[in-house]
Image (cartoon, rainbow, N blue to C red; front, side, top):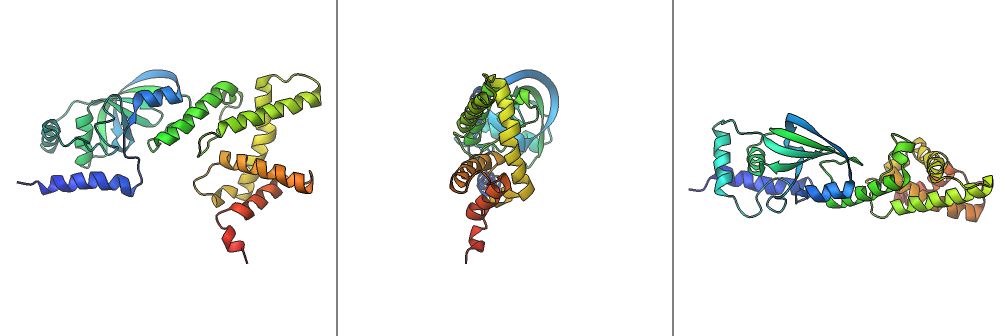
Length: 278
């Protein structure tokens, strides 16, 4: 006899991630760990973990999708665990690895799957935490992880996180951190000419952040520029407006200021530019 309730749960498990635009596949723990870099690790003991933050696996990321629906059909083991869950049996805690705010299953994939299909919101878990170089979110896609891997490499090369604790530069696209490295190199070169000395790299990084990057970002914030570019970041705008500022000054002279360049860029390329056209 067909279990209608089970069929409905299976359907919802597949449809809801699509409706929420969630990534379809689990993230592989070793791949994420390698890409973002790990500063330290620590045992966090038994915890109650939100199920929607469990988004990856240590060794079974090809067996379940992001909603922990089995990709190769429901197994007898999963059905037994679901039945035990429905009877209210106390199941052993799962074992999870944590990176940032995302969790990866080391042991207990079927228990996580059963809990998700039963509509639970949390699960008991034994947690080992790995502290990443850059923030990791449960909503991150593989592309997001690659961007953050570039960020981790940028921080290793520049030491910006140590020079300016709390500074955070993020992008929505790959390949942009190399642009920042070029900007730092150019800033270092011209400061060296101005001061007649070789500028130590760390000093150049801090100077670029204080005198080039931050003033432009503060202009974005004063003018509310980011609201005109949904899905983008202040880092994205910095790269775009830096180029725009260069061309404006080439055309109209050095008197073009930061806020003028930001306002002109928003007017030309912002989301509501068509409303301003005649």
